[in-house]
Length: 161
Image 1 (cartoon, one colour):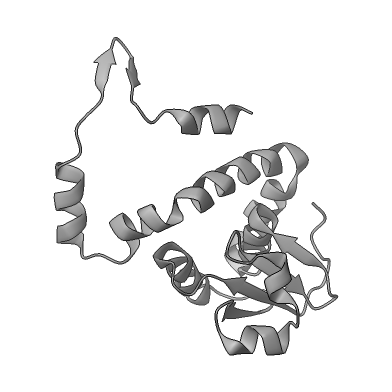
Image 2 (tube, rainbow, N blue to C red; image 1 turned 30 degrees about the vertical axis):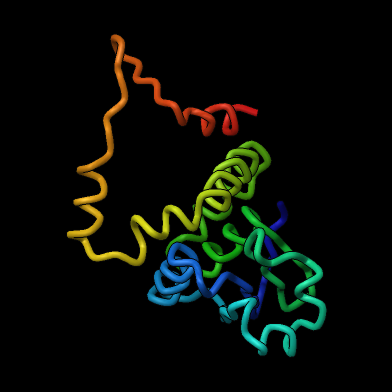
């Protein structure tokens, strides 16, 4: 992924109903800026006004970023550009933009995107007490030696492919 050299602004189209997406938006907004970033929920009427045809790109599936030069980035590349907008995270964005790391970031983003509503329910829109109670009620996996397998180990296969 080639990061823009001197971006002035990016527009981020995200799921305004997703707790994880909204928490990421809030976190980015608290960071020191390297350049301007505008967050627009794809459900808002403003999204179609600012970016006609945005819905043809299926923004419900993954975050979309449009640069001031008109380039479109989705998923992991969009997340990397958001980090790149943060003055203190530009080095990390450069590392994640490299081919080997971007491949890992893509797998992680796909995993998160596929599970974002469930993760949001547990971590991003609940009070700490509710999260603690939910995690307390999770049945621990059966462990053999140093390896613990669960019924939900599909994420490992997704990350390894």
